[in-house]
Image (tube, helix red, strand yellow):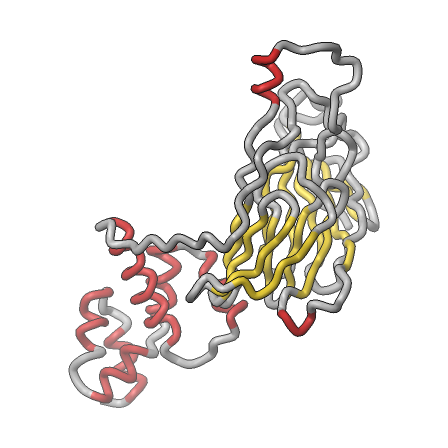
Length: 296
């Protein structure tokens, strides 16, 4: 059969039939292993975010989606059947003992929603309430795009660790003790973003770049109607955007230029006359929109 006809016939195969076709002969193996349906199978079974992952790792051979499908499926089977191997890495930093985040403390207007060390206007407290306010800081783990290294922070220091053997490649001192626990690490290419108490900084994490100083991202411009700074929930990278998700808004930066893009707020409360339903307020560097649309 011609290559185009063979590709058309294979497009009607499911996962099992396509896998069998890859093992019959050389022509079928090439046509089956490089077929675009492997990409759709990965996105359908395991999530569309793998499309962004494949762009980030810069792998371009024709058989990459089939290899990725086999790898993810094997990992899921190992987890479901409890075949995982647990490695203990005692050389890594332990998480800091406690965090000063309190139950009734007032949040300060910073990028990360940091809390002051002691609430204003609060007198003596009972030992039970004091213990409730001192929460254990658990730390954050982030896997690099290339899966060769991962990052671990314990409340101040970020370690760059080689995934294969647990060897510490580099330690980054952020210069601050984090006051509130949340996932504050994000990675794209050779850049590591860390959300500090009062700003977001970017380090180039490779050992060769250890002498380079961090880059501080510009502060966000929140919507003008925002009553208070929300509680930070997660720092992540989506395509070309660095996103800080807070409890009442979402802040976006460009990962290449580090320019602040916009702040998005969704409101379900009482709206002005003439408006109905929920809406979103978007505040950006070049304009503000207070309705359900987005203007730049």
